Image (cartoon, rainbow, N blue to C red; front, side, top):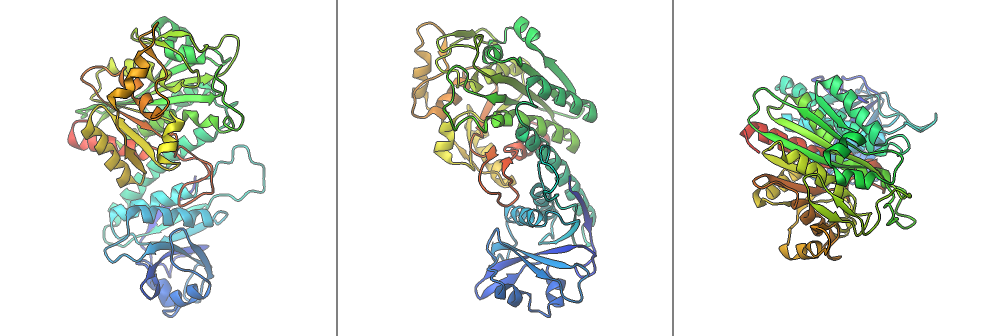
Length: 500
């Protein structure tokens, strides 16, 4: 991963291959942003004029390279757009994205210095996180010839508050590394990441970070009566796993359970997906990757809260032993479910994990899943839906997501949509209900497995978990690590408040 350090040197005196500054759109043209003062001086006050001549506008996402003039020790100046000029400071997400654009643009560069607006500890963290996320590249299967990520990022910060700046950079590094761990998992080909392999990765991380990891294999799942996980995994040569990754803190006053859908490949099972819908289904374990990364991040940040991740891992394949439409599964805890569509499998593995997690009486359960195409239709490719049995919790998670730069939207759980699932003539529930509002129906199904008295929220990240278009900001093509920052922020808030 790209190295990150903080320096209080002036932009003009720092030796680097490239020097990054921010520019914005002012009422009369381009305006150099704070942090670029000494660079502008080296251009004799004409940085904006030079950039305008090259076609720059200061728009967000823009990146323009200029040879460095005498007076700078860097060879190149990269100006990244911040959008409209802001007198009171730039939004943290604007800074994250600008740093991400810079890091992506400078792929192949050995050392780059970021002279972006970073006066406060929060701004330093935003620039550091955006830069490290933007520098991400997944090269596990690539041969030689591709550009390497920028080797080192040096974040320029004022001397005043330099200790806080370094602490912020360290925090950003921990979160970025865990997000990139989640991205790697999502991007790994399904022939290299099955339930057993994912469980082994969790066990290795547990040893590295002092986390307690428990793995239930297919025999233990059968003995325990985990009918959802077993039913989904029946058709695969790679049997399912339920993995518990636990972080405890001696001063914790609250316990959180994060549950992740971990379908390492989803063919749809007997209800096979149509052509054109299978190619990216390695990403159907993005929820499990997110909760796993969030717990490791909580440990690395030393948060005073107990957090347990439950990874519900299975591979959904068609075969002679696969669960059929019309089969009835007895879930963990005893409820029976008539399977009407084997491609509605995520809710089945999550239901088992929700019941199991509830037995430990956490203060809050949050599940994360690439659960429904209906949520993508409702909210698009960049926004995840938030549902909950507690309106205050739902609004809180939505707010936290926005604060850390993740797009979300609160969604309802209309009671009338429950009827279609409860009309099975042979089981307690069906795994399908009304076609319209399918994302909400899935949420209502999961709600049926939440123990009484436990606050619960469901994040449907089907849209933003896997980005198929061109990269933007700090978001690469492929796995994005959606929801990791929201979960970490929620754990931090819980640690500070002493309750979920």
